Length: 135
Image 1 (cartoon, rainbow, N blue to C red):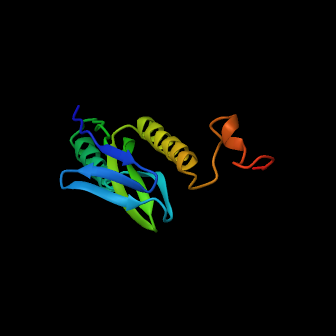
Image 2: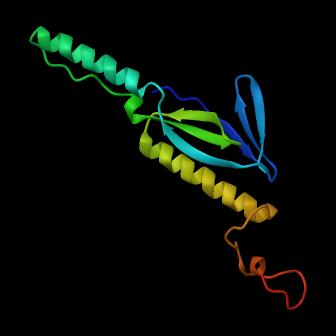
Image 3: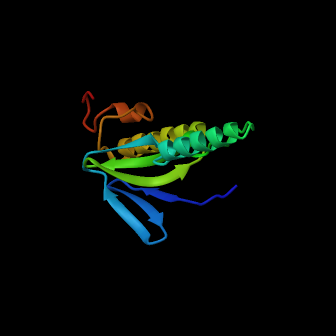
């Protein structure tokens, strides 16, 4: 199976993705979220398979073409309303796991940088800096 490494660097203020053209950085202080979309070629692949099955059926054969795009997904970073593809993963379950991992890393980074409301990583994170402060 073909594999390609995609490097993603998460900092308190930016998300950086390394591609063949170099590093692309996106500002994390603006509106964004991670997501998973079905592959762009899913419909085209389905139409091609239907045509091949009809032709084979016409000749008295039965075929079942392998589906690749239908079982794959794009991992996307939606930044200020614009879709930015991070990578393609040819297994929906693995793609969902990658998105969950990215969201968890994002949550940890937000907690660390205090950019957003998130889960406390420990008891010391639940209290303010001043004596008697409440969260």
